[in-house]
Length: 111
Image (cartoon, rainbow, N blue to C red):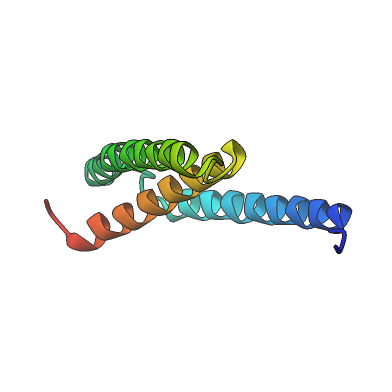
């Protein structure tokens, strides 16, 4: 079995985090220079609605994931996935759902 170069992966993750931080700070500074407020009433409503739906969808996803893990353990004798993978999968699903819902509500217009 091939060993995985974790030191290379760790440095790649660190570089990615630093680059994302630079992009976020640059975006915040550009928004401030434009003179427009960072959040208005419509943006707060869109973010709130997307966050609420993301909470419900994420909660239901985690319940189904736990149920599938329990059923798999009871019938096949082994867990479907380790807790770490379930946590990472849940975080990824919630992040993607929030991004998609916020984009959808922003494109949808008035609601």
